[in-house]
Image (cartoon, rainbow, N blue to C red):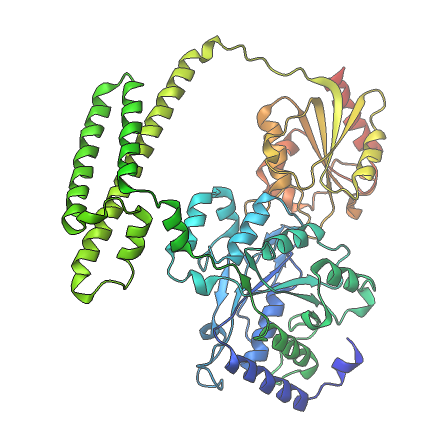
Length: 558
């Protein structure tokens, strides 16, 4: 804790709170602020402290804690905290003002793969409702549904994130570079650039802090001093008290003034969506009809199933004729007018008040005709694709499908670029007479489909704070688990998982440390453990583990 924060008094706190209140009064709308960071960095504690600053007293709104041995999250769902959830209407002055909405969520791992980027993009653009399980949304991968949610939900504008606060622990040993790069790329993608702020918690543990960590953190997020905060939270070494603690709350109140500064704008492209659609479909109406009939006859005479397409053809002609008759009745002189122009004019206010009925008819008939044509063409295309696939399935027995030739070699797989050389060195200590391939999988996509030519694969996982060897269902990113599960499913490579740099596994007389709860909790690890293919080490194998590995390698490769 720096000297300035130690000198903060209650009068300083009152002054900063008054300045903060004025910022809220000047706000044009309630800002949505997302709190993002790794698991165990103090996100929820920081959020509770922020709410205590705004409310005037501490409450555990966001659940705090972790299950380190089991690798579990306390915060599992995306949770929104509007002012009604953290302010008391009867005790807070200016309750009716536009106080911000905070978004809390489960912690991310230090990963920047496609799944993490997709989740971050959806959070920033307000695609998730309150209470959404982020890991479930990632596993379902309903890309189209997630995209349409932005247009379907009525509150999508209020759910879009206006500020991002990235939280990390000042006593962390390693900067979450992969996660930070993923966040910055999604928050500053050019479509909607959202201001990013940074917070380092555990400022009170100065003796455990790396002096260079703060500068690395600020550089990685592109922060200046106004968008950075080094603070302590309630529930760390500073328990909540009945009286306010100025040395905790004053720095946070000053930081919130910068976060809520109305001069910081979210840059967002504002394309004229209606004009874009109008230009896209602005072709003469008769051309649309001619094109639709041409495609209809083309599919009809290239298919043998005549009767279903004849029925569709007749139905389409009847619907088209009805739509045309309705349009010509109200607007006979404008059949050659572009469809996009018709839709634009029909929804505009250029008509007189007595023509509202005509506007409704023209708009409904034109839109209905387009919808019918598109639906018919999509149906015909799907039927055509289905017929082509059925033909391919009939010919498939004639194809010569052969299994790839597997090599008598060992693949050494790493997910950390910094430690891949250490992994190779550890592997060479037990592999002397077989060829070794080094494989680095950091940042790769579709990782479950990767195929290896080696008969044996040593998967190295580095020590992490939650002792997660392979991710479970509660984790957002499942990079390591997806890779291992993919190799086991293929059944061509024998997989051995090695958890390394774990101090409790130094010179063991068994294969792994029994206190690692993830081995018993993760289904794939349980399967490998029953086959004696899970090991935990420090920086080298013990004699017992080395002999065990040599036995497996000799049986598989000799």
